[in-house]
Amino acid sequence: MPMTDEEKSKVIKMLDKLDDSSREKAISSFDSFVKWLSNALYNIYCKIKDALKSLWETICNIFK
Amino acid sequence: MFSSLFKNKATSSIRFVIGLNQVDKISPNGWDNRLNMPTEKGEEDIQKRSEDIINKLIKLTKISENNIEYYSALKRYRLYQLLVKIISNAYAGFKLDNINPADPFDLADPEVKKFVEEERKKRENKNDKINATKETLINGIKKFLSDEEINLFLDTFDKEKKLPPKIAILGKSGVGKTTTINSLFNAQFKTSHTIVGTTSAQMKEFTLSSGGVITIVDLPGYGRSIEEDKEYDKIYKEIIPKCDLIFMVLQADTRDIADDQEMIEKIIEWLKLSPVPER
Image (cartoon, rainbow over all chains, first blue to last red):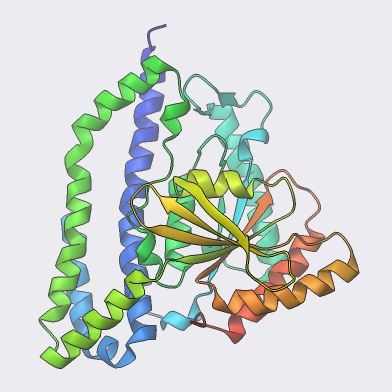
């Protein structure tokens, strides 16, 4: 049975949600990496904390 | 979007996620099987009921909403959202970022699946962008370190990457622990053997569709009797400090969470005593 326009619209909305979640997954991964670094190599984390912020901004721009 | 990242030291988070499973059963006639997604009314009911339980759990146990997610493993609904919570809260959770949960549209009708495939082809470039950012971060870090520090960083990073993520899963019988693991990690059960002395905790390795393995520690259920719970507490105390994440599965349509509440409070206390996993 062919899909109705309403069904197509619903599926597209769901795909948008999945895309958003996929982006959130990448963001949470970076967050997790920074948390790990601060636990595993605290001295290095302190040294590059400011640089990480800057890198993060670069990454944010990629997502825009 | 990233405002919370640099505010708190990492140890302030807790390696614990509570999943409210089987939300597809919340609303009678609230599931569209052809599309394999909730109807509009169904989604409203799911969200309302799930938020009620989440608020109740937060009020009773002081756990954060960042540690709770609702989903349906059987219908593959909101698995990405659950994975995000797991990556965020697990120790070195970034090791799980190459995982893509089982596709909900594989369970939809064939014409729906075909339409999804066509739509996805139009969206392919977006994912390449996400993967590129990981390289940007690692390469960027190297610029700010001495050779010695780079070697230390890479050595520690590689060692961590080689350790299979270890996740302890617990929940009462029938809540869908195995379905969750298979759907969430798109994984297949590999081996099973008892490893913790005379206890009934089992360590299982699952092969991931994205490569590598994940170690799942299946903890014994709780809430059957006071005697059993006391015995199981010993197992939990032994295993929980060694795991990268504790994942508790609850049934979303459950009304009685007294046993769960007690267990959640205990787990939070044990994890506070071991802010990073024992290796």
